[in-house]
Length: 221
Image 1 (tube, one colour):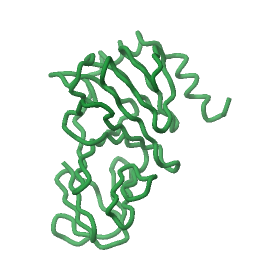
Image 2: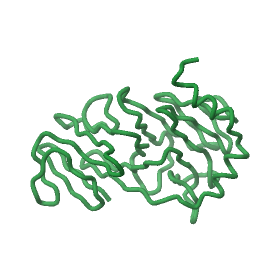
Image 3: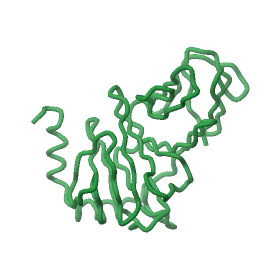
Image 4: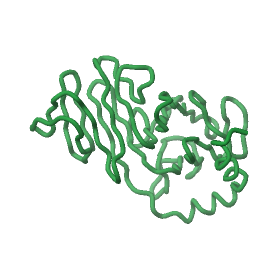
């Protein structure tokens, strides 16, 4: 067993669907998340929690990732531990076409099926970052209606490369988001415009901001 997997393996053995379901139902701290809108690319829900609850988009549902579809109110939990992601099914779930009923480690490009029809693609495109991406693989949609969900860990890459968390094919270069204390900041070497004023270097990510560069523009809701 690799040393870096040890802590996660111990936590996996301690988890049971019943105990996790009880903990989730008792959790009342789910907070609204910000949305990153990138012109010409799409919108992405920013989720910072180490444990993410996926479920039905229903009134008062305590979920981080809400999906419009035939799902349980809480369908699955995705837990990050030491850079690894663990999927805990809370209803009928398949991972890459196989039924699962206990926690499983997730890998880049895994396909999750929740219930009979809802499919999600899990991606970790960059080996240098623990951030992961969820995209819809079925005709269902997220609520709010975004193109993907960013499970933010330490950093997030926006750009044209295949290793970018958000692929922006028409950009000339990359834009890095990274965590600094309790905040998230953008880092850019070019001079950009933020809410009408020029800025460069580390730029604090704040709700309502609008940032424009030579070949991109984005906003945060």
